[in-house]
Length: 137
Image (cartoon, rainbow, N blue to C red; front, side, top):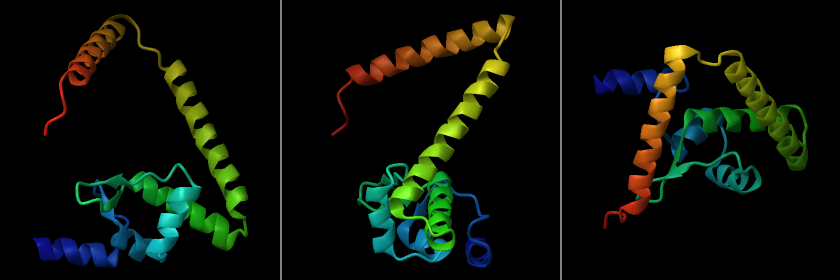
């Protein structure tokens, strides 16, 4: 089974849905060098790979999509880093605005609202418990 997964990753790596991609995999998918990705992390605050206990960068699908957008802006459309940063910020704010509009349009009513309120209260309680407990050593 793992051979099949490896073969699928090699033929079409971006369509294979996973939670995280290592920096080498992102480099292979995007055609960028690792030092370029690390530099872009410092220039574009929206790229935030998770760093595992081994301090290896683990990129999510969202990060991978952003890296591909940035690459297109810089290499194909001729943007400067500052211009690409501004464009990405604009895209992010537009997506956030659309999401807020969808949430306003779909306001829950009646029992849905009560259920969501109960879930929200339970989540707040869980967050408080987590904040109070000491981190595992």
